[in-house]
Length: 288
Image (cartoon, rainbow, N blue to C red; front, side):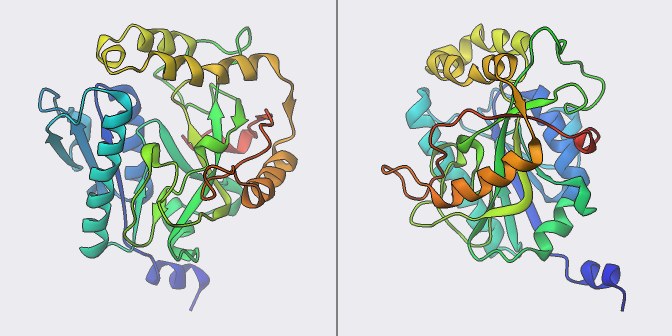
């Protein structure tokens, strides 16, 4: 039996879920990517508010309007993740082996040099409770990179990211758990960072799009202003800090984040507050 045949026979059933509100730009990419990697029939999208409309590009996806969850950022976020954790538990008890939980602007990526799809990678990985990708927070290098265009992949237009502990998240569950706010941790459990697995965060990778978010009355009414301003530092960091070697520093980050924890949350990664920017290798250009 060939190795390829064996891997196909051992493929796990994998679902991916997210919740969005007024975020078609990112959701389109999310559906396109995860649909290709694990099948559109395994995607579950929940729209926060019955005033939303399910876009045509969600055809073939399990898409559902849900009553709006809260009006303030902190309380709404806790309720959102409680809801999504319960949905993940339902999927796991309903026949899925693994459930991916990420925001619409987050893409779980396998290093192309492995020659594996996301489904193949996760099917071959030993996952007891969860697995995390190393977090990379993309920014726009001002003066070098133009506004993001709808045509072309994200990575072909954005080449720099900060290694960010906030985005090293336990994104994949193998059994029912309770995610903390923002998927940043799972309560009462540790995390494991997969080799050659990354979580790409694109939420603040374009100055113009970020300015539009500042003017979004819906987000401002929920208390997003300070959050957006704080997270937009990725643009500043990639524009001002030197870009370091990807292989060397991602290797260091995996070891460091595995061993170092913040004293206030031992099930989250830490990295001594280091601000490390890396240039993404060209082999990722066509991934997303």
